[in-house]
Image (cartoon, rainbow, N blue to C red; front, side):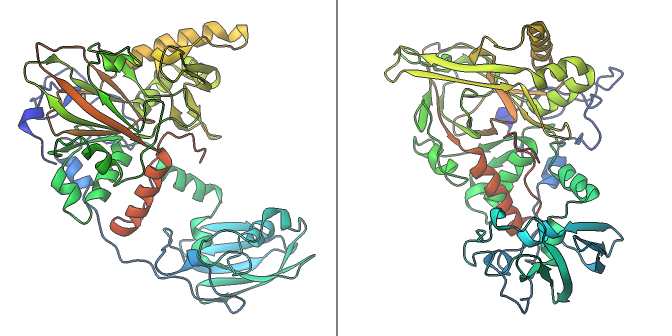
Amino acid sequence: MALSQSMTTFLRCLSPKGTELQATRSFSRIFRPGSRSGQGHSTCTAGCVTTLLQPRTLPLKPGCVQASSAAPAASMKADKPLTAQGEITSFEVNSKGNILNITWHDGQKSNFHSLWLRYSCNCKACLEENTGQRLYLCENLDPDVLIKSVEREGDNLVVVFRGKENHKGFVPIQFLKQYDYSSKALAIKKAAIEVNIYATEIPELTYDDVTQKEDGVYRWTKNLSDYGFCVIKGVPTEETMVTKMAEMIGPIQDTIYDDVFDVHVSDHQLTNVAYSADGLIYHQDLLYYESPPGLQFLHTLKFDDCVSGGESLIVDAFKVANEFRQSHPNEFEALATIPATFQKIHYGRSVPVHMTFTRPLIGLNAEKQIVGVHWEPAHEGPIEVPENRVEDFYRAHIAFAKAVKEAPVQFEWRMQEGDLLVFNNRRVCHARNGFVMNGGTRHLKGCYVNIDHFKSRVNVLSQKFGNGDLSKRVGNMCLF
């Protein structure tokens, strides 16, 4: 990964004992290789990221062979490969007829319930061939359905059910492997999408890398999935370029700030402090929305040398939250269970706004894994929670604010004209140093892309150019 001289800032690395190491060409304002990163976290030095981001083009996996009862639906065709690979050693139905036991070639065992199998039938009568939409709905299920017989035909298991309906259908073996819900399989799949890779330098690509190479957008989205942010160098400084670049990933997400916005000092009445020369503390954008923006794009059109200050800052909120959990377990629990209030109440604008939304600052799934971090202090309103939790919340909030501000790995750099900063607004927090114009101009053009479009794009491109790995957690509170 090339590091441009114009964006290089001084870095001091400290070992766990405080020994000063050689300064490297990185953008990290503070980076300590010995800091807590957790098992499996990336602690690579400069140059390692490039290796991680090299895509591997694998042959598409073959589709499933048609069962005698019905043709495979569209989702099973060869041009829509499944991610998981697996081979069955043996299978049998239990004596009750409600569970299919499968032993895989690696010795692992899985159990599939008759209800799950009936609902998951892939025959044309149950799954629409072109769209992959389900025709057989859960409400149609016989709650007492049992398995009469199972036979293998090619790459499918043909299942005959008994009960109120004697349906004969099939489920591809690859489908069973991909959606295996045994405890071990679920643990492996959740570990694969866990956010556990953290940047040690700013991921950077050039405009030509993205637009002139077949796998360019894949490499871009892979950076965003793995590290939460990426800088594209040398994007033409035309006002329409930010939307052209964003639409390579997904459609523009409209907000109360319109579909595209200008970040510069405004002569009009402020609708946001960002449109001033003031500094901005670490935050995520628009958390008063039920679905806040996913990716944020900031394209530097003009940044005169005479402008002092205005550096951009990034910190990985997931990394901060994971470390906060270890250092402040009680405060972490409070922030994960007590809802904060996010609000935008502004009647003094051309289109008045009154938005509020409550959610915990840290979101967890059933396994207590972090699936969301929500940090926008300037747009928090008074909390409305049981009175015995009020002090717990504010004490925890103070501690987390300090953890964000003093995070051992932060990135601070001055954007150059033509730089396009793109980051996952649900995963990282961004900030800005205040600046003085000195007769110059600092002008960025911005827009958003919905998080679901981004996640889908990552997964689709991974099938085509990568190894089929799914996107890392994107912070959208998906509970898997």
